[in-house]
Amino acid sequence: MDFAAFSRRARDLATSLLREEQITVVGHYDADGLASTAILVKALQRSGVDVDFLNTRQIDSDHINELNSLQNPIVFVDMGSGQIDLLESEIKQRFFIVDHHPPQRNSKNQINPFHYGIDGTRELSATGTAYFVAKAMDQGNQDLSPVGIVGAVGDMQDLHGGLKGANRTIIKDGEDLKLIHAHKNLTLFGRHSRPLPKMLEYCSEPMLPGLTGNYMACVAFIEQLGIELKDPVGGEVRYYVDLSLEERQRLTTALYMLLLDHNAPELVTGMLIGEVYEFPKEKPRTELRDAKEFATVLNACGRHEEGEIGVNICMGDRGSSWSKAKRLLEKHRRELREGLEWVKTNGIKEMEHIYYFDASGVIRDTLVGVIAGMAYGSMVAKSEKPIIGLSLADDGSMKISARGNYDLVRSGLRLGEALRDVCGRLGGEGGGHDVAAGARIDPSKKKEFLRLMDIAVSRQLNR
Ligand SMILES: [Mn+2]
Image (cartoon, helix red, strand yellow):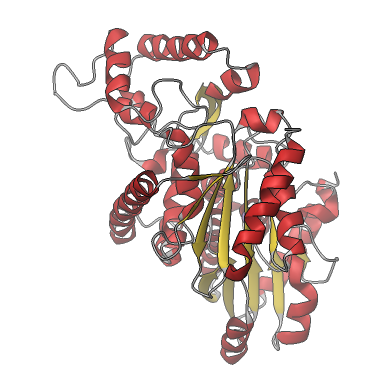
């Protein structure tokens, strides 16, 4: 990796951007996209550039017309590297790209870690890339390091034993400023924002045998350990972060034993503990205290087309934007619950090697993947087959979200590959991770898709 050359490009780009009087930042609508948008907007504002922003799922011809009518120079973040040719032929004004997706090719006015031997899928996100551009504008922008980590975690760059590569530099910056506390801990989601039994009930990575999806069993499990559910003095419901060190150890050990009793492979027990990123300056018992939960807030904003709220939170608004986000989170969780309930009652269809459900017109396409994952968590679907959720998108295409688990991946499941092959053959497109992937096809191809996907999965699993 050539970090020095990467830093030079960051400096050059920072200089070019600061020469502009007005800029429009155009970012992707997921956690990494919103966080990277926020970093650039904040850094440019601080340097006196007149900046506005928008977040979108993809750049289509409508956007291009809209952008061309603005006439502002544009910075694309978390998008653009894969579409340089299109952008160069369609966008009339000057534009810049800050991205970490595999690039079509190198170009002037673009920064992408891949060009410097830095793996953009694991070592640096778009937010991280934007962070280094911001830091090159002004060292004072190092206070944006927590946001840099939220973007990386939002893009799941911490999946393989914690953040690596150039991401570590951002952590170091944040630690020096006492804004980031990276440490080993129980990795379960909700340590900061969910009552203890809820944290266990909703845990799907890893699946906790007998606990995931069973609230009463979780309550009994915690009580058996002699851990109080409520504070004996104040009576408040306790969260993981409220436990004493000794209680935390007791709980962690018990969860380990539970997994071992069920012959969980090392890969799965290993998921219980990992590096987590805490933000000590944020209010305790809120999602914003933890990088992973912060990223979920941003995803909820993006999925409900309220990207602006997420960007404002990343830029530091803990007032009205945070209030709106909390309401949005409630709505988001309600829709998830209702969606899961719908899947439960309407039944998952079972094929030889896959489960699927078609929630077209019922569950919004941006939530169908999360709900497919939750179907495992709540044991609606058994874990020996991957599950595929279908839904209709606004543009009339069929959105496909596939979810597996790590046992299946160990047996050979490669969902991203399967979707890319199958949907490619059907004139659609797909891809993603081994354990979670997505695709789009024409709805008329649904039957054929399911048939081919069933075959593809059976081949991967040698069944
Ligand atoms: Mn990204």
